[in-house]
Length: 164
Ligand code: PNS
Image 1: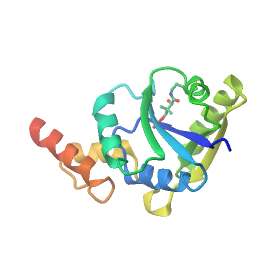
Image 2: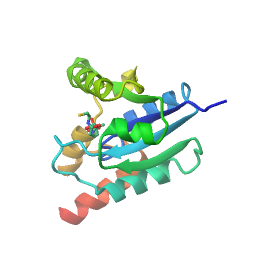
Image 3: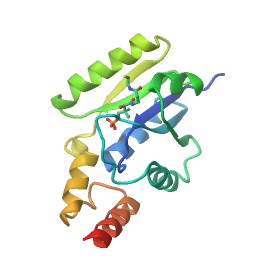
């Protein structure tokens, strides 16, 4: 039987507990997930390099053989086709995500009709968690440990104690 694989794409700068929740739930729908770091042209200033983000993700999912971590520098739908994935998984938080996600899903569908976008509602606990807000709080010394995996918390602390 062919395995149902989905791509879970994003910037993951850095990965948050909201992302982990989405991945866990995605694994109940798909046989495997490819967590893929792609370039979001709207996000011009990254905190962690793609290699650093990949390293963190690989460490976090070290014991999950059905989660692959990868990166791609082109179009998401081309990557999905290359990886023979039938779906793109995205999380929806509050209303504010909707327009952007809707636009992106329709564009991806126009570019390649074979790949379906599947949305899951973010768990209520993570509805206000985003990489951007985590980075902003961490920049000013805020405690974000309840919002990110322990490894990410460590890396954020290292980063800001070095620069601060
Ligand atoms: O975590 P993000 O920043 O919301 O993720 C957005 C991302 C990286 C998935 C999106 O920008 C993306 O798919 N970038 C690759 C280029 C692409 O295919 N764009 C969508 C159609 S134009």
